[in-house]
Length: 538
Ligand code: ADP
Image (cartoon, rainbow, N blue to C red; front, side):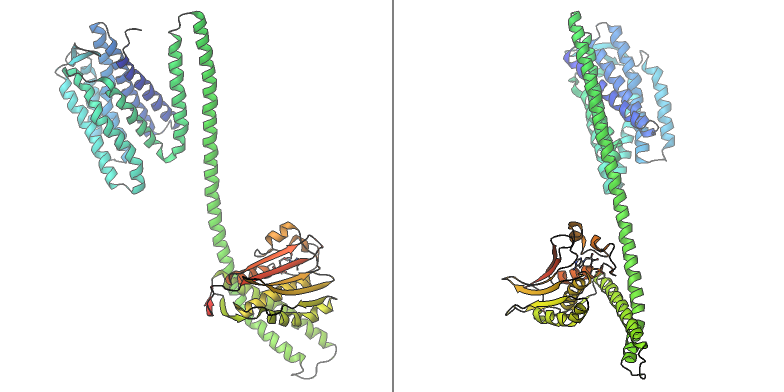
């Protein structure tokens, strides 16, 4: 082993890395022409590097020449595989003739490289030996550099025309090529008697790594698996090589054991990386699906809102007409109403009111969602609105056996608000309290602090659990607490209230100790909000 010099180990290491890398890229995409060409290219580079390793260490002249001819089998195909790779990578279809000429030249030079007209005799350098170039070596260099440069030009033109995203993909190939283009050809110099320190062979590694990165660029995660595979294979190869240098049986067995441990560990490592990559890919796919589903839902929601808006507008006018005529009939404008007709008319009127209420909710929602709700902000005394609503609804509460009590607050400060919207919110709270309280009392209270004016409606009704508390203010949400009880509703009222209060920069909330333990609904408006007085569309 003393014949292996440190210099010659560099091409050996490079050769192993390159061929393993090329192989794994090909294994990932066995039918992809780009990956196949990449593997062939790696193979030729590896042949060059491995031959160089043997050439440096050759003792006999014939050995050196033999290995140099092996080198040229690889080197002979480097430019044409590279050029072919470039055509496919850049999507160029118009250079067929040049491609065919390149392959013809490669096959023409192949037998020549094996003759003494190509390389013969030896130069001896401090780091090893190298063959001397002969007559056909120079035309070969012309072929070599023509296709090398053609590849470079194609890539450069492609890069210039590429989109920003594609540029990012092409850049590593370009940089990798530049490294090899400026350093790699120096490897020809020792054939002409010029000694070059042999680390140039290492230039193949960054080049191939960058190229591999570019190939799998569109699926960057794959790169992780490949890197892990290349890494463990490389280490395994070095460990296997170590076996041959064992001096005693015990040492040999120990090294086998170490190798076995390494292989098992490597399998686990690669499997772990693969699993992680797969999981990430799945998550990425799921996120994409979710995004699509979300976009579709938003679109459907929009269509539904449009439909609601149109339907509600069409319904609103006839309902007002019915309301008008019914109340005129009730009041006897068309003659005395017979006794039996009265409850029927009341029923028509109430059902119509119910429908109007529903359609108004729909209209509110459609306006809220399109930002067309009109707000008329003025100084407002909330306690006056509370008294008004409580007064209006107390008859209905009484009919159900409930009492409505107002807890007055002295000198409640004025706030900037839209009276109609605040009335709507308080009305909804009290209306719900009546709807959802079989017995007991309802208390409407106002209070204020340094920052806010608050209004709460407390009832002794059906209460609610935590899930309901968290979801009540969502559109169309009807609580679990109303399942099984006969109370009509749409789940829109509180949603609208929330939107109205939010437009006032206020907050809205619900509290309940649990099912059957009553509820407290409240809202608070800022005393010094930044709302400016006047009419606004929000
Ligand atoms: P609706 O009353 O038409 O169902 P709301 O948006 O006004 O719609 O209310 C949503 C849900 O909140 C109701 O279905 C009910 O489950 C619950 N809820 C509202 N007010 C009360 C209340 N005072 N007590 C108990 N539950 C209530």
